[in-house]
Image (tube, rainbow over all chains, first blue to last red; front, side, top):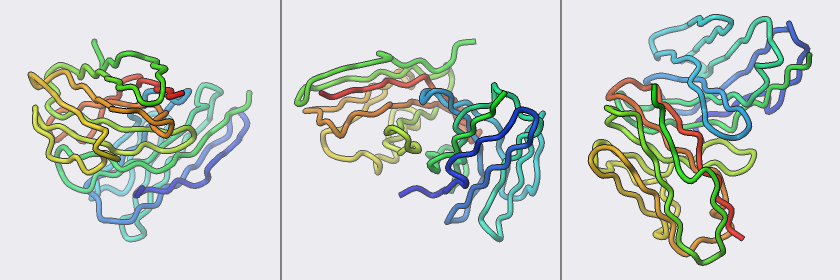
Length: 112
Length: 113
């Protein structure tokens, strides 16, 4: 069964607007990661936030983590048409090498 | 630099045939993972290798699925007697020990007719 659930399932915004995607998970985690997928093929790692971190920034991306609520959010500021993709959160339950547990993703469409 | 590569990129096969999917991880990455993604769905974990051994095979959906890894490098996922429900994109990823971040290949799109 899947650990994470993204919300919303689909999001459509205008270029320049901010996009916020949420992720909830069920069990305790070591870290939470966000990935982007274009055209249903390979995933690209965006950002990793550890369980003892609350917020992290990378360029136009801002990720928050609330372990008490078992939730995370990904904010993309000043969106561009090239940001159109599916975004997945993935959790790591143990340290080191363990498989990622993925949600079903949010499909983001940025309209120029 | 070289990333994770997978072959073939697309595979169409008839129900009942066996298929082999190959993954070449990033050199030096000790961990290797196989996932399956059905259309419009998230990724489903299949199996994970640490070196050449598989500590976690819990995601393999049936005994028709098997995988091996040799030389702490290339991995092959084999599906025997394919069924139509096996149609999906099969994604491979690798990671450095303890890094958390996984690097994905482009996937193999399998279609079983």
